[in-house]
Length: 490
Image (cartoon, rainbow, N blue to C red):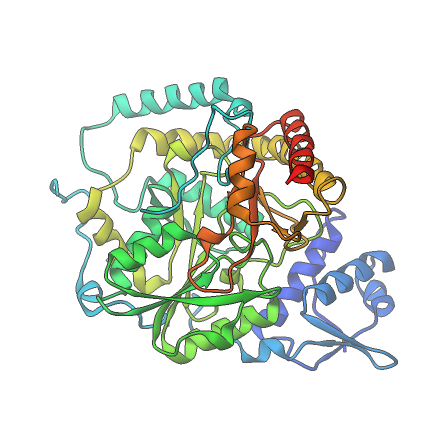
């Protein structure tokens, strides 16, 4: 067969071809079981080198979109046949979203901003008294370009000085929502108009708002186990029944989801805290499960910007044809947590209830910060900062892995081949108790954080979360050298 693929110019040819083939598979235009032309024939058809088409096919094979049968050729995987189909005649795939909004939230309408009137979790605790603290979720502010940020703030102040004193759109400033939508489309394959983006006070507020418009007291929420405690705390505080669901090396075990769940919270790109990505098979199974039950899936893409090996599967949201997934992101890991800016791209039917819930809660976020951040992103400073920090964090991760695979190997091993994020999880392989090791390490001025508190049910992983976001290479090296000496003495 001849594929309709358009190549524009001579730059990023493999990426162009990959994107079009992947979209054709996800959209159902290339049905499961379809035999594709050979890499040689496709290269001739498109006028590109065979290496280009080989790279494209290898990536699609690695991500599970294609299957190769020896002697027969390459075929579209049949896994995606189970994805909910796009509604005919509706260009917006979210036009028929899952009916998971509560009755009270469904009836609520956000008042236009120009008419509006005034209306116990485990967060990181970085101990600066220690020589080295491996707390997770902490970033390195010392490398942030504050001089550039100051200019962005000053520009935002001049804009604000010229305006009227008035309440703003609960969904956030248009300029920042535009910047976020462009960033998501380019970096995370999440296609969203700026109107689809809602700016929040960090990812935590996004989770709170989604839970408020989705859940009634007693509703069941499924969470990963081990998982992110502050998310569990939000759902429990709203009266939901939080049910832990185990994870394995492919991510959330969909077969163990409770049938009554109205909401599922997952971290598919980089499972927290263990680190594995959710396989394509599990992603499709989760969307299939949510479609059958009218459940909402919250995808927390909390540190997706930092990938150090291979290619990540694109977000669950990029497979969502039926309005099942609310995508949540944050600037806490890319800039710093004190900024308190996050965002979400919810299903279309959630937009009005979420805006109303935000308006009732705190009206809107800080306009000055949002305007400055929009300038920072649209002028290219954010992308440059990410590139610099990627190199910095990569060096710290390499140093940590070198110790775990070297001097610390008799006692600790990485839980997964962790390829992304700002932390690694390591399992205790020696007959040692994690709490006792952490206590001894603290006496040596080393902060270790056991994995046990991230679990809700047994069996509990015996090991530690090693965050390296705020720890220089030299301190990592010195602390882990000391830790090896300490473990030999226990």
